[in-house]
Structures are given as structure tokens and as C-alpha cells.
Image (cartoon, rainbow, N blue to C red; front, side, top):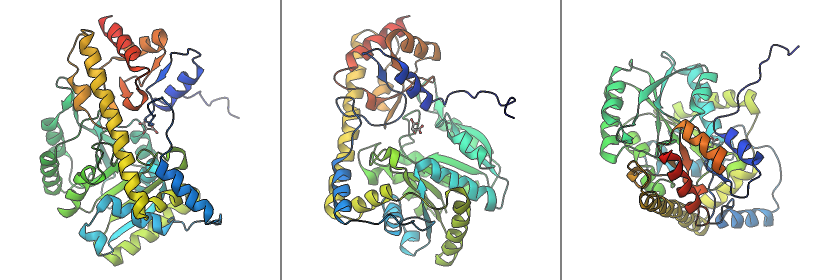
Length: 399
Ligand code: LMR
């Protein structure tokens, strides 16, 4: 029956973890997947998460089904974290449902837009973008196109190219924007540039869909990282938003996220929520319970919330210190090329500029794993491996 099914390629990001696991060297380093590691290279369970779990366990909770749209205390708090005091939230005009982390939120959004967006179903994503965006939206029935984003020459934002491409998009296209800590480049528009983009997107009558997978990870401050989203909403855009709690709460495997849509008013919000439930029910019936309870406990408890914010800041700061150390090392080793971008990029990743052959060489010769586009997860670096990593990169660049 299945003789015509060809073997598929490994996933460009998660496949790196498989290759890393198969390597038996004690020197090996995994800088592929964007998952935070502590100063000893170990997965990090936040203490606010542990405390939330203790509180939960003491309350002896049941294991009943959640509603199709998820845990109400969680979705309410998630929307508040993202939108803050935005007017639509205050007037009960934001439709929000729990999702299976950020990917699930994008997929619910894609499926909803595929079904109800009353215009041509084209979505423009940045070039480059997170490797899974194309597949998620294509499998949701949208046509996926790209806009310019990254300038290889300056290793920064191609703002002129981005604006030019936005200007040529047909009215009523969907534009996917990374709310902060752009993946894979670590390059974000400045607040002034976001304001310009908001005006342009309004003028061209485009529909903004924000992917916010790293709130808190860009600057260490969840409010600052929500600037773009909140500005667009205050400017009157009825945005779509995908949120993930994988990175900022370290809840990777718990799959906690939310999808929301800004509606015109409470009546429209209720209609949108009813249809989001109809999108979700045949996909997975209702979302998982435990992670949403953890996130909800943290977001709704003043003390745990404060603890969590300082832990997010701590993770962001450790990454920044690694950026400084890597930059100093590469320059100190007289590595050809400019390396300032390592320090100026933000969030979980650095887009190093290493070529695919260099990344292959690093894997084969030095047991160092990263995605083929030269993206490294900064969180995989620590005081124990950064010198070895720097020397290996320097050698690879020198050829
Ligand atoms: C990444 O880009 O490494 C993360 O978003 C994890 C993933 O699922 O790809």
C-alpha cells in the first residue's frame, strides 16, 4: 500500500537535535533548537514554574476535559500579558483561545483565515522566517509569499526593501510579523520603524498577524517586547496574534499558547470565538490541561508573577553575556569578518553569517550542531563550552 511513499527529509531544526543525539563525542554542542539552557548546559525548569506546580499539586486538581477554547483563567491572563491595557481588551473585544503552543496558535489562525478571511488568501512572511511558518500556513490552505527582511551586507534589517515589498502587496493580503526577537535573524525593527510599518500597513489595507513566541526574551522585559503589538492595536489594527509560553516560561513540552483576534466589539468577539471552537474541535477536541494551569497560576499570582519576570530577565541577561563573550573571543582570535552583529542581535538566536558548508564542517570536525542557515541558539553556549566553540568557528572561517 505504501510503496509509493517516499522517505521525507529530516526537519531543518528538530533534525539537528537528532544528529546531535547520535554523536558520541563528549565535546559535542547543540546550538540547533531554540531551547534555553542554564550555565551548565542543562535544561532549565523555572523556579516560578516549580512553585506553581507545588501549589497545583497541593490543590489536588482533577483531570477533566478543558473547554474547547481552553482554561478561561489562562486565556484571560495570556491576553492581558500581550495586549496590556489595550482598549479592545478592556471592552471585551478580543477573541482568545488556548492553543498547542505557538505552532498550534499559528495553525488555528491559519485555518481560521483559510475559512473566513473574506479576501484572497495570501500570507506574506519575512525572508528569512522561522522554518515552520511556510509549512504551517501552506497546510492551512493559504498561499505563502515572502517579503524582504534581512540585509546580508549589513547583517541587519533591510527596512527599505521591507517597505517596498509591503507597498506592492495587493490590498487585503495577510502580513506575518514577528512581534519581537525575530527568528532566525535576531534583528527587529526599532520602535520608530514599527510605527512607520503600522502606518504603511494601514494605508495599504493589509491584515497584520503577529507571531509572539519570545515575549520577554528580546529585552528581558515583557512590556517592552510587546511594543509592536500594542502600538498596532492602539493604531486601530484588528490584529491576529499567536502566543507561546514555551520559551518565556520554559514550558516547551507542555505546549502552552494562545491564539487571539481583535474584534470590533463584544458581539463580534463572541461570533469569532464560536467559530474558533469549530476550527479546533475536529483538530484535537480540546487543549492539554497541565501547562495551562501552570501558566495561569504564575500569571494570576502576584508573587509568582514577579518571580517569573525576574527569571525571564535572568535568562535574557545570560544570553547577552554570552553574546559579549563570543564577540570578544572571535575578535581576539582575529577571525576574518565583522562580528558586531553577534552583540547587536537580540533574543534567543544569532544569525552568525556562517555558510552551510561551514556549518557542515563544524558538525563533522568539531561536533558542533546548528541549523544549516548559520543560526545558533545563544542559550546553548556557556562558560564551559564557549572557548571551544569560538576557536572552532574561527578555524572554520579561516578555512
Ligand atoms: C526554534 O526555532 O528552534 C524553535 O522555535 C523550536 C522549533 O519548534 O522549531
